[in-house]
Picture 1 (spheres, rainbow, N blue to C red):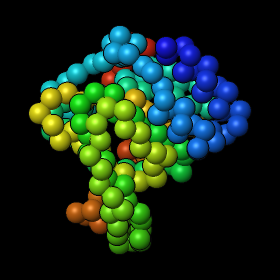
Picture 2: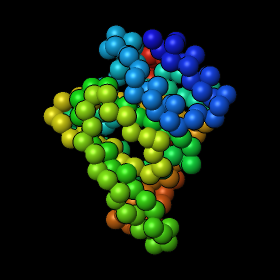
Picture 3: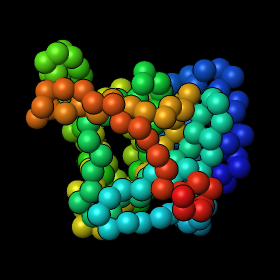
Length: 173
């Protein structure tokens, strides 16, 4: 199943990932738990970013969210990004930037997302596992990047964060 997704994404890359077609494809994607098992790595206190596949045009990650973990409000470098809940329940908050200095964001919506829910493409959002059990989400990033903006609403500032993987192709880093 993962090989088919990679093949399909290579074709979508030739069209610069058309949003309606990509969203429809990802919503209808039939991935079973066995296809993702190899990439499922769990830590109790933080979420893990598990790289399934990366090339210059896109990357595929499985993010594993232990109970009550979250990713801060962050951006996606202006690139197209989709997240699909595979297991559990995630809460996604989508934001609009009102000003950079001082930082001011407006919450556009807060969504409770069950398996099969597709978010994206997202510009600025936060993700939280609000449940008491593991959640997982499949992420597709067009034009992968190695750092992103973190929006710190308490300090009213934007900070850069270097991104890393917990595992690559089923092996921990």
